[in-house]
Each structure stands twice: as C-alpha cells, then as structure tokens.
Image (cartoon, rainbow, N blue to C red; front, side, top):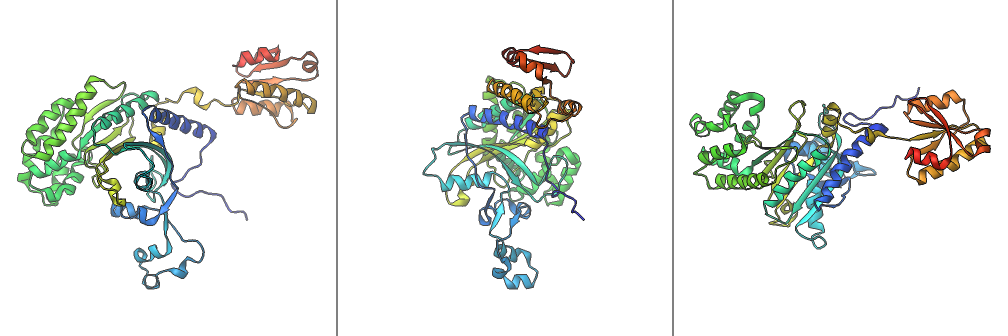
Length: 456
C-alpha cells in the first residue's frame, strides 16, 4: 500500500497564488532596503553548532534544530553519555552542525569573518528562511522567512530614526495603514530597576512588566512580589503602570521617575532625540508610540527596542521588531562593534494583508492569453504568435495537447486566464486570430499586431 504523503508539523507547501503574494511582500521590503542603502548578503542554511549554541539563552538553544553527523555518527559518540541517556552531553559528539535559528547571529559571524572586506558602518539586509523547533500555532511556524536589516559600526541615533522611517515606508508601500511602531530603551528599564534598588532583579522586573497588557497591573505586581521585589519599591514606579498620553507626555513622566538614575535619564534623552527628529518629518502611515513595558531581546539589546503591532482591528502578535546591541560581534572576538537592526515578520504580515484584503489584484496575475490547440499545423501557427506576445512582455501559452475544445476552455476558466485565442484553417489562411474575452464572452478576428496592442 502506498504511503500517504505528508509534511512535518510547522512547515507548509505554498500554492502559486501564495508564492506570488509572498514574493510581493518580499519585493516591497527589498525595494525599501535598497532605497535606504542596505546591501544584500546570504549565509548558509546551517552553521557549525558552536556558532549558534549559547547565543540565544537556554530556551533558544532548546529550539535549535541539530543535524546528525553524516555516516556512522554513533561511532564517535560519547559512549558514557550514550549509556546514561544524557542527551545534553551526547549531542555535541553526534551533531556538529545545526540549522540557523535566526539571521542575526550568522550576520555577526559574517561580519567578524569578513571584517577586512566590508566597509564600516556596514549596512546589510538578508531575506532567508530560518528554523525553530517551536510549537506551531497561528502565525508561528518551524520554518519561516526572516527579512532583516542591520547597521554595524555606528553608535549614531540617526540609525534608529532611519529604521523607524524604513518601517513606515514598507508598510505604506504595502498599503497597511495604522501600524504602531512601539519604542522603548533598555537604559530606561535599567533605570527603573535602579530607582527601586533592585538592579540584580532587572530581568525578573522587565519580564513581569512585559506582561502588563496580558495580566493587568495587579497580575504584574503579584509576579514582581513573588520574585522578591518589595511593595515599597513598586510604589516608587507606580506611575508607569497607568502611563498614557502622547509620546512627549510619557517622556515627561519618565523624567520625573528617573531623575535620580543616570542610566535611566540617558535612555530618556535617546528616546526624546528620536521623537524630536520624527516630529520634524512626520511618518506617512505608521504611528510612533512610547511603550515602557516593551522588553524584548533583553539578553542582547542595550539601547532602543522596537516592536511593530498591526492595526488595532487585527488580532495578531507583532509583525516586526528589533533594537540596538552594543557588542553582538564580541561573541566572535570583534569587540566594541555597536549595531542596530530590525526584522519584518513575513508570515504574519501575509496573514494581516490577507485578513484586510490588501493584496492588489495584479499580484496574482498569471497567463493573460491561452492559445487553443487544434492540431499540429494550428499549434505551430499559434506558437509563432505566442513568441511575439512574450517578446512584447505579455504572458502567453499554448495548450500542450489537441484535446477537446471544452476541456481546453475549462482549463482557461479554472486558471482564470482572461483571454483565449482560437485559430483554425480559416484564421491561418487570412493571417488573423480569433480572440475571445473569457469574462464578457466577446469574440473578434484580429491581426497579430493589433492583438499585441490590445493585450498590453
């Protein structure tokens, strides 16, 4: 009995229409990347395990797909670990490579390995698939594309400004209006921890604060108290739990809370600089908002933190994110190389555009005209015209078999091909073609040059 075909959980096949829509998104992002001066690079689908392991924290390491060594991999296995079923110790001896988890760490490796060849500050973009052994759910897959842009070798806050503008340009280009670019700063979060005298509990504090919109103020405070943060400490930062208003109004509140924290005030100054510049050049369709609860990437972000939320009418997680990191390349030996980068969530952007019906009709346009095949002589006559149409930039094809007319017409209908050409003995003798509009049903006899003009 034949095996029923299937694909691994968290992966997908894409139909021609889906590929066209995904390509439309990627081409829109790519065009803006290049307009902003970013250069493309590509890195291998898999890296040496020691390049990836230990770079994403314990949770990230668990989600990395390991690749078994080729050949008799058990021959060189750690026999003691194998005997004791100790997978953590066994894995390095049977797996030396792994599928990349993201594009950021391979990019850091690339910069260090090719540092003599690149010009700093180095602006690169990368659009490639990544793999994570995550639990699949809506908008989260085990194989997905990332669309990243980074600048390394510059501390300038003008880069943060440009990334906000880049987000705005891409989503404006996709006609996705009303996205919110949330901005925070790691220094502000460090300042909160300093103000409450709990610097050693920064991670506990921010992880809890990040859940404010999910579990509410009381839920967050309960979690912080459970982590050993005192009630007195929480009173010192009470205003952040109900922080509302414009970007400027929120900054004013932060200045009051963080007035005694040098690092906190530095973060506020950076936020204020970005806001002042953006106010001089208003965004086209996105909204810039200060969100002090935003704490993504705390293991490596050192300055600005970005997260992009879809329009409020769409129930979906973030569709982009990023931030400033001061020493990402340091993990590979190149110290003091500051960088900042952002990523676009291709799959979630696709779902948002689909839900809001924002894909243009032209995205899925396919063959414009199909030539009906009546036999060898007629097919040759039609194929000569097909060649001329293609030379003129018109997508055309001929049905490969001299099948029944009804079958060929049904084929054109199912593929939503707008025109068919019927050319038999009479048309060949008169050097014309029978052009039929499949939507209106109108049909006319037309010369090749006129047909080209009509179909352009």
